[in-house]
Amino acid sequence: MSTAYPTTWRKPPQMIQSRGWRIALALGAIVYLFLAIGTIEVNWARVIAGMERAQRFVAGFLQPDFTTRWRDISNGLMESLTMTFTSTVVGVAISIPIGVGAARNVAPRAVYLVCRAIIAVSRALQEIIVAIFFVALFGFGAFAGFLTLTFATIGFIGKLLAEDIEDIDEAQAEAIRATGASWIQLINYAIQPQVMPRLIGLSLYRLDINFRESAVIGIVGAGGIGAALNTSLSRYEYDSAGAILLIIIAIVMMAEYSSGYLRKWVK
Amino acid sequence: MLRIEGLTKTYKTGDKALSDVSFDVPQGQVVGLIGPSGAGKSTLIRCINRLVEPTSGKVLLNDLDLPALRSADLRRARRRIGMIFQEYALVERLTVMENVLSGRLGYVGFWRSFMRRYPASDISNAFRLLDRVGLMQHADKRADALSGGQRQRVGIARALAQDPELLLIDEPTASLDPKTSRQIMRLIMEICRERGLPAIINIHDVVLAQQFTDRIIGLQAGRVVFDGPPAGLTEDVLTQIYGEEDWTAMRKGAAEDAEAEAEEKAQAEKLLRAL
Image (tube, rainbow over all chains, first blue to last red; front, side, top):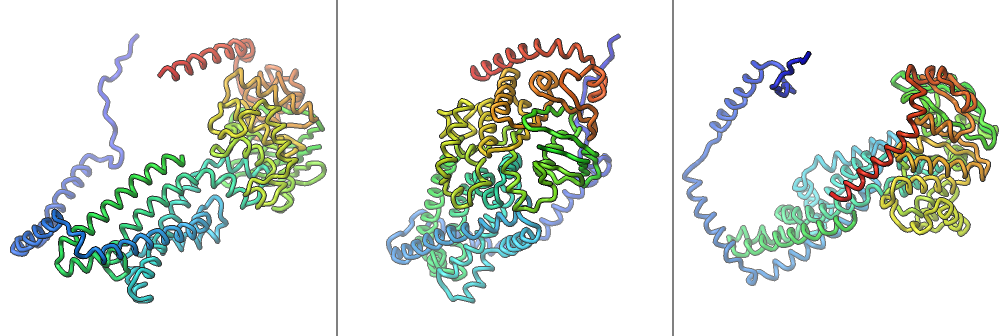
């Protein structure tokens, strides 16, 4: 009495049950893609002219000039590094209480809503927009850059820290609560040990994001290496610009390498 | 000592986890709480120290009505109720010593606990407890470096560091192998005897419960369906608690099972290590 079991099996469709609809949607997506590409206007004459500039740019890159503008470059670099470091430290320090407040499992509802709102505002505003605003408020220079990066760091670390706290192993928190610990002791004994390695990792990650961002917001007047880059680009000194870009790449890679090493170490 | 009167818990979803549970636990008595999964065993012990808020009913610990306490008083009451957990619930990244000292959190201020500067008496007591559970040389290891049985011993030391009047024990052996389970149960019993501590132990393993506890309470769908000495757990009673099953076979098989399982586990570990 052996039953004949089927020898073929196919995974049943997960999202759209009807075969007709699946084909129609796939065709629709392809047609839309072609139509959308068709609407892009390309000025080929301009592209050819641009190729020549790109060539000069690449040539500048291949022969970077570190010396001619070294003063500007090193000043910009120092400013950027200072801005990056201070804004990360201050930003992380502010975002820790906000992150704790924005974690549903440890904060009362009212605090939770306020902290989530702060994070939402910080994340909704792109760095460049914030930088333009702060430059208008405090004038050109690194202070505007520092404020911009601090502001952006709060949203970034606050959100990820809050999510990490919401993901903790509740049993450990329950055990600490059962000893009669106060709220702040609960945070220190049950939450902090669980989220610390990730918080350190995120802070290091934010440090290198802030450095890269400092180059971008410099272009809108918030000081640092970005300002030096902007100046050399507008003077058509592609060799100096190339040197600046190479320095940025080198520093970002260094940060990447050392943060990876540090993260492994704090596990 | 501990008196529970008409304890009822209805979850927000409308599930009735406990209905009208009442019993007394006198000084020094170890109660085994048995019942199928979902019978409300975990909810019951969590309603005592209010990790779960009871819907109605009284929990009197030395005439102090726990459900009526406000937060500061609740903390003061909780520090006298030690709790031991199923998956140990140690703070994995803290050292063994910090985990044991965390039993003192209800007694010390934030600053002392933050700086890990506990009073000398707390520290010497913590060392004495570690010695008692046989983990003296592991004090500075991180909790996640220990084996399951060792972690549960730390859990026991943490609960005792609270200087408890009552122990609540939630499935202490569920994640341990049969041999370690017996060792842990024996340790818990010895400690309760030494200190005359009353305890409520949630336990899946009926054989283990019968072997070690003074009294058995059987829960079924949130109601007490049996309350009596371990010897009173007849087949009829077990069927009433858990449903139809061949109970004699289970008892006879239990000892053999335990051995076989231990052997299998050792084999598996050896394999894993070889890999």
